Length: 191
Image 1 (cartoon, rainbow, N blue to C red):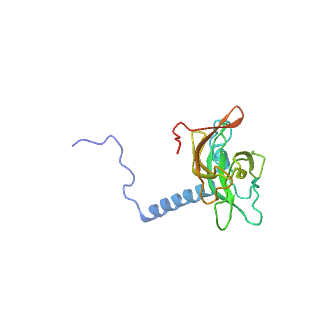
Image 2: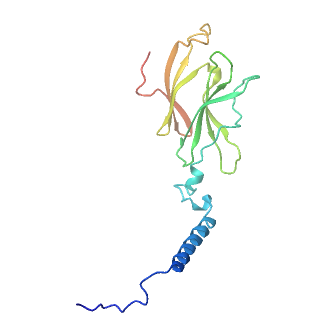
Image 3: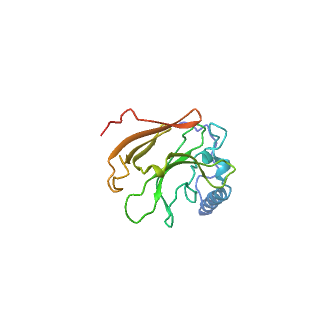
């Protein structure tokens, strides 16, 4: 039989009191760690422009924005909203499709780009991609790789009823040279 190189331990059995002490210590560590959490603004890692990831991820919310659309007694209805960094500055904008909340018919859409500077409390409209005065309805609205795409349904003349658009067009907007430039997407086809 070979002798152990380690001296005999003073004790090899645990008592219930040692288990209670261990459980109490672990509970204390867990309780203390929940109290000493860093707040989210300081816990976020710096983003590409020096802003925190948490701040950069917050796209402007269209709630309460004064859209340049006349709805008379009805409210403005935000139909769709998509966040994304359209100008490459590291802060997301929000592109919104809005219309008047009419009870019937097909009210025209407006497409607006919203932003909010760090010192502003409320987002603001910085670009109008589709003006409601053009009597267009927006479908297939998407945002990908910094470009906004949509299908626009319109009218060939003022005599066409609002229920029945007879013109279909694809549009793409991309930030170039300090402005949104409209083009036709390469996959667009005439109807």
